[in-house]
Length: 514
Image (cartoon, rainbow, N blue to C red; front, side, top):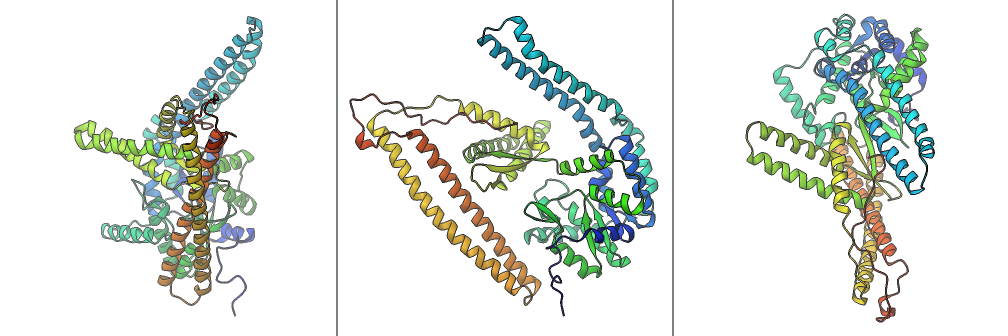
């Protein structure tokens, strides 16, 4: 007889005792991002993490793919961290300059004396100086240099000893071709992990290779695995109400089917806390704080919220850049062609992120998850859109002009009604599809189940788009009504009376923190 929880693994969070047992007994597998954290930690925290890894001795193991990614990215990891010590002060100095200009402009308009101006700006200057001085102290305390890591990397030397004989076998060339083919099929079916990276230009298959090598290790050694990773994308973890529950149910099922053993996944901060409690590892509060802070930024993405109308403008500008870069690269040669091809790849990559944007429940914003490497291009789009938006609005004060606005509003309201009806219908279809999958989940084979689940995901996407359209129309109707702003119906307009102008142009748009 099955228990109330059997068959539903991954839908509820495992108790902390399970993770404690895993730290004590399971094979410990660490992901690439954990090894690369060593290049971002302070020297003290780095030493503590390395000591923790040494404690596991023969229970520590990494897939060949993790080792490969580590070697190819370790120099970039330290370079990115060192660049922060330059880019952050530069940004702060720019913010200080802009803030000081605003204060001086304010002081001038208020006819302040020189002494009053200094009282206004001095606290600001002092605060920035203190902050910049603290950043400089942190830079001086950081012991890694780019030249040093390239010439003689102390982290690489230590890991070479700690992980000696603990790296899995890689795939043969024939296996690689087969594995990539399998990966592409899994992406089509949205089978985790790795489908979230399917559109990456490089190493899109990396997560799947890591997973397959973990499965083979567990299968050959008949061992349960605790996977330590800071990758919290939705193709690795399941979330409920924004909180991580654990590894996705599909991963648990595949792991159990292949090895017959247990699989747990956790992030570095939690792993260190448990290692401290169960193994007596020396972990300072500072190291814990660094692990948790870096864990939150591992994805190296930033969620940007923009109004729906700005999203449409940005998307239009981005599409222009994609077409422009493609045209230029087709006509250029040599180094010039490489430059345009890189521009095209960046613009295309950002376009994918726009296509995956989600609308907030209130419909006030569209949320776009932008990678940090693509943030400069996004900022350029914002600047270009602002310049285009700074045109003077057109005005039409005639009765026919007002009538056109009222007619436009009427059309929008009709479209909104249709969009709401469609969203409701799709929501009903979604509920029926989800109910079908749940009710048949125990009586159909995996292939049929995947087909049904894909149908559910397709319906979910249709529902998301329909809700987005409803919210966009509601936003546009609100904008048109604000333009009319209690203006009389066109039939009530007196032709001989002076009317205030209607601003029908695109208004200047701003995005916080961009």
